[in-house]
Image 1 (tube, rainbow, N blue to C red):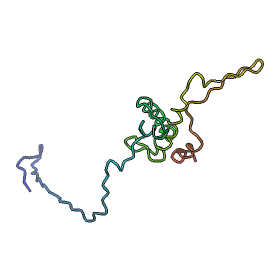
Image 2: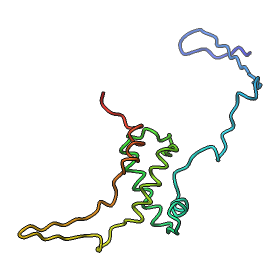
Image 3: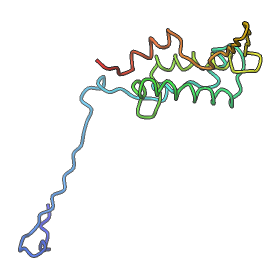
Image 4: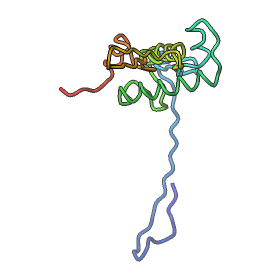
Length: 148
């Protein structure tokens, strides 16, 4: 403890400075959880996407597809199920991996467009490059905030 010799502003007050130190000790070791890098579930990588598909996926294509699907999933659930670093939880991570694999396999190409002509009517059928399946939506809807 130290008594300060300065006065405070226009007042005749004297200050006292008290410095304390608190030493802490662990009372119950089992109450502590060590968070290691393995504890955190990171976003899927292009390597995991390739393993899921059973074929090689280039880093450029894999990362691009995963970024798009992650953004779509995050927007759908309004960031619920993602941690403060933007990493998805296990369930949403599985949806991202599943939808990304479908996007890699069914990437748009000119042969995927089908034209049908029936008399004066002509139809063009083109598959949607990305849409969540019913199973994926069931998972995502668990995290989506909906009106009551």
